[in-house]
Length: 297
Picture 1 (tube, rainbow, N blue to C red):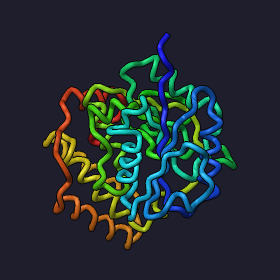
Picture 2 (cartoon, rainbow, N blue to C red; picture 1 turned 120 degrees about the horizontal axis):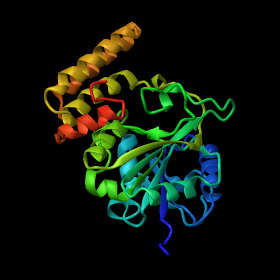
Picture 3 (cartoon, rainbow, N blue to C red; picture 1 turned 30 degrees about the vertical axis):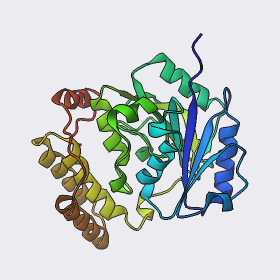
């Protein structure tokens, strides 16, 4: 008999939600099967000062906020180089809550049944209404959040990643700080031959929020969109992809200040270093297209 997959969980926190963090840790501890090891990364805060952590939780105190991908990369390394102490890592928002006790076991089963499944994206539901926001379904045909499917990206704060993906495709792009880091990793993982599943039965409860609540949202979204294209797309697709997103942004009619911030970020994306460029293979472009999301949308 093969051994059960070793699972870890990475949670980053800025220390402003200690009660929610404790509830999340309790929900991880209640998971069926072998215990899920946990690493909590404090972004500019000492984790030990936040709450009474369960015994055995790994902690990392960062002197400054490295951003979402930077903090999660530190969490990966808390499980050894590239996370090699475990077979897969769950990444969970610190104000989320695992609704069911079998989520970890479902992850183990999914990875065991498909050796090329690299990433599983959970469904996010509001704890009061049970509603899943359309933006939390990582595909274009998002009207039915209860339908599981193969997808081309995943949700950053509610997912599981096989650690071999980091070995083959690399970790999250720390320079992005916030926004689109998941798609950057997803494209690299798909290009390396991995698959990504959205699973409606793996649920993280999370309060309904708007991404624009972050002050840097419009600038970061635009800058990182350009970086994403410059890093990953074949040269002919870069202007097409960014032209489509420019048109979509204008159609959505953001406010004047939001549009100004967006164009500032768009310019920044072209004029600042984006990190290493590794354009995906054309067969990956075709694969994305067959999955329903060609890399021009």
